[in-house]
Length: 132
Image (cartoon, rainbow, N blue to C red; front, side):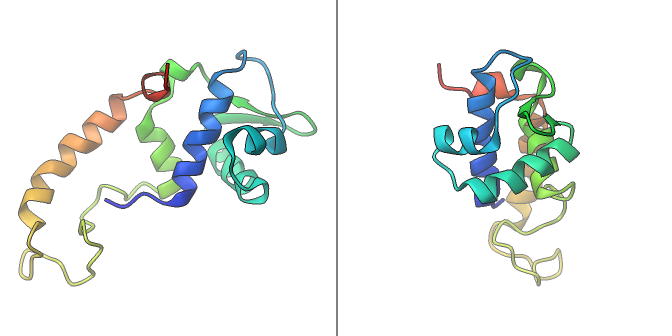
């Protein structure tokens, strides 16, 4: 499984929002500065997270978590950014030709691990991954 830079930036930004009061909307440029991520790219990411129901947005006010950090899972964050097929039959090496007939060296091990990883990520909350 390969996670994008977009997901890394999203998690950094969500950590910033998780430190704020629940109803505090924060401008994307302020989030970007605190998270040390590029502001224009983060604005796009935050819009994706809003479409995915992870954050709320208010024009002229910015963004806030849609729910408390302990009610937002890593799975839903990943789905909002990486798409619903992240744990489908994608090869761990991203080889298009990987299949049961032509498996890569980790094909069958990865096939067994994917459901466990997906399940774990659907339970792991933003609050749990936040540094204390």
